[in-house]
Image (cartoon, rainbow, N blue to C red; front, side, top):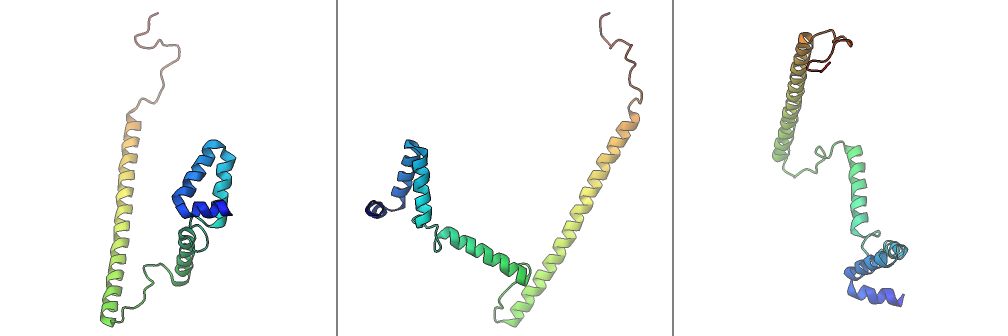
Amino acid sequence: MYLAERIDDYGKPAWIALMILGFIVWWPMGLAILGFLLWSRRMGCGYRGSWSGWRQGKWERMRDMHRNGHPARRHHGSGNTAFDDYREETLRRLEGEQSEFMEFLHNLRHAKDKAEFDQFMAERRTRPQTPPAPDAPAPGAQS
């Protein structure tokens, strides 16, 4: 591991450069270096690294959401009951406005769809219903 310790002295950019060089020279070498970096947690991808911390935080958020409902509803009181009551009332009001707005959008989409369908039906009624006979020459065709 003497070589790995020497590269560690230069930091992550040296490992990235070595990995890219490995892919350029012979792709299995670059893949082996990438595997070594992930396995040895040298790039911060291990248990205490940024990626696993993000992943662990994501799972904790998901678990809390299932336990406590939607994350916006989950709060740790501020200690001031008047503020907490005001916040709860404001959230209830905003949720009501959001549901009213969603209903408005639904009605608007429905009205637009109905207008488009009515236009289609009107155009369909004005079209000739019988196709031209196959024996008749096309307009402008030479006989």
